[in-house]
Length: 263
Image (cartoon, rainbow, N blue to C red; front, side, top):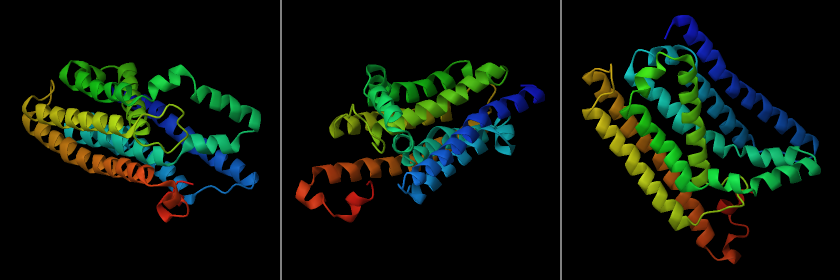
């Protein structure tokens, strides 16, 4: 991609995360005005997620990713896995419902209960969107083409983030989720997704994408495999923690420190 196009792509990709961080802070201020203090940990988590996503799509790492599969994969882990996890833990929908006036909060609640929203938050659909998208990206000509096309470059990076966010949000219910899937269903889909991600990493180790050297493919694939495992371990812990809490008798949940973390 031409350098000028690369700068345009970086700015266009950075803008949504800057706006997301700004809007979140506005929500925190409005929530405080309603005498409802917001968790500093959730604020830090959302801010860190926005910052990591911004680092992945703009700046030195984004430039290196244009020429190195290893740094491209590092950007993938940040924008597609770690940033979505941190931003989901920021509970943006909960903050939005707190900050909005009652009338608009009810409209948002109606939207959350709608059928289209239930589709996007279904673990199986989110997994196909997330892991399926990665298989298409790396096993077809899309990876090579996105370095030549500004629009495709932007579309693929936004897709990786959005699909990663929907996947994480469909597994760990931090925000209000009217269409909740069962724990066994989520756990089985999560295991299938982890397997799909790991198998893709091994496939890329032996079958480099077009215009990627063998050494670059091996380094990038190993980063995808082990880096993905680390982030997935956090996701598995959170799913198991929520499952453990849900399985306990209600009388034991009241007043327990673990339960109070999500309140």
